[in-house]
Image (cartoon, rainbow, N blue to C red; front, side, top):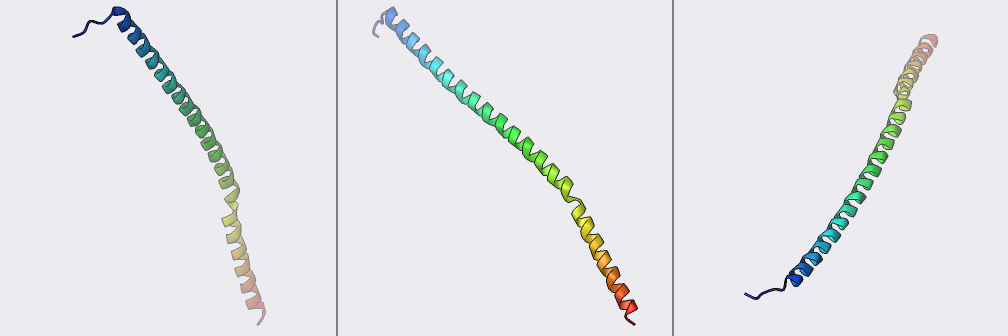
Length: 85
């Protein structure tokens, strides 16, 4: 085995520490970006849910109106059929 100078070991440990800190900083930045994107996605999803709820609330009378028009048409047809004789 070769003897290493304690100064060389300390220097290598300092370089390793710098590399680990830089890696943690990159990972921390990437995680912060993911959290930001997740928050944006949550806000967009909430907005879309509100808009869909509003559309559904405005749409409910359409089938009722269609049924009333159909019944009125049927009654008008029956009335015309009975008064034609």
